[in-house]
Amino acid sequence: MPSYNLTIPPQGEVLPIEKIHLSKENRMVLTQLLEEFTYYNALKEFNLPIDNKILLHGHTGCGKTATARAIAKALNKNIIILNLSGFVSARLGETAKNVANVFSQATYGKAVLFLDEFDLVGKARNYQELSSSSGEMRRLVNTIIQLIDGLPNETLLIGATNFIDSIDTALLRRFQLKLKFELPTKAALDEYYEELLDQYPKQFRNVERQYDISYAEAKDLTLRAIKSQIIKAEKQRELEQKHLLFSYGTLQSEQVQAATYGRRLKGKKDFLQGYKLEELEITDKTVLATSGKKMHPIAIKTENPEDQIEGTIFEITQQELLETDKYEVVDYKRVLGVSASGKEAWVYVSKNQ
Image (cartoon, rainbow, N blue to C red; front, top):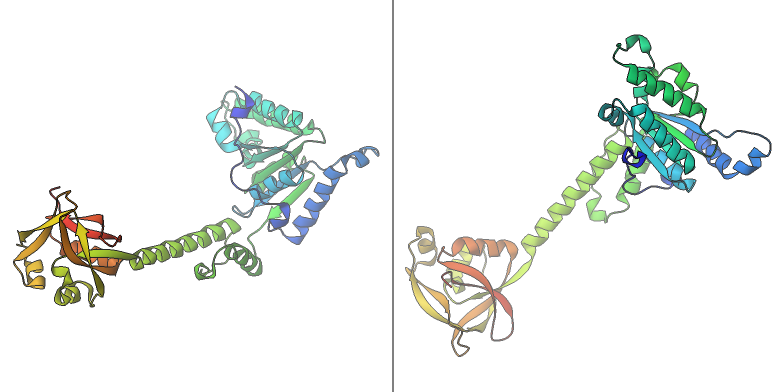
């Protein structure tokens, strides 16, 4: 099986290393790491190896994966991401061979190889806890140890785990650098919240902040709150959206307007061409009580431009348009029409057309 099928392609935006929220100590270590790769040839002249094996450990959601991708971007290297948990469980029986293929791919491309959930291998190192049927896991662990030991300087290996205490010391020793990722402080989270919120208009920045959580959790919380506010604002905008309504019947009555909209509408006289009026007997008790009339006019399309009906064009909101839908009985349907003055307006006509 080709090794490119075993890895997870990077997705989403890759932040520059400067934008990653790191502790002072971690930033100093990573700065040194990046400089060693940048000045690799100068160090090589003195037979000095570079630190090319780094383990990121700590609380989930605190930026380990983002940091690995940022490192690759800073070094202008491709990143190969291998999630050991899903990979091993899915391909037990051929894992050692396929992991070796992934290491070969990373070595050939002088890439960054990111092994996520590295503790899976660390736990497997404890052979006493493995059953006799776990020979495949033993071979995998031994293969990874050999591959790590043989990794050339120009390839960078990054391991990530939330459970460093479960990793065997023999494996830990093979990482020259170990960076701990902890839950951010209140001050660090406030800074992160500000960075997130600054990307959006002020009216959407009203977010209740939470603390003692990871950066990932803070981002999810913030984006959910912003999306909720945007949706609420959009719904309100829709409700307040203005529409033109051509009324030729009872909606011209102040009594009906007051009952339907709670206000009196102001409009202008106009005509709708290509329609004629007929009468419709109303049986809906609510509509009868509102209009006080048993017979209502209903517009019938004729396709004859000489036919026209007189009415009034009103400006109403989206919510008022919905209230109009409720008022008109099922014999009517709402369509867009163009008045004689050229205005496009909603009009309720016979549904049997």
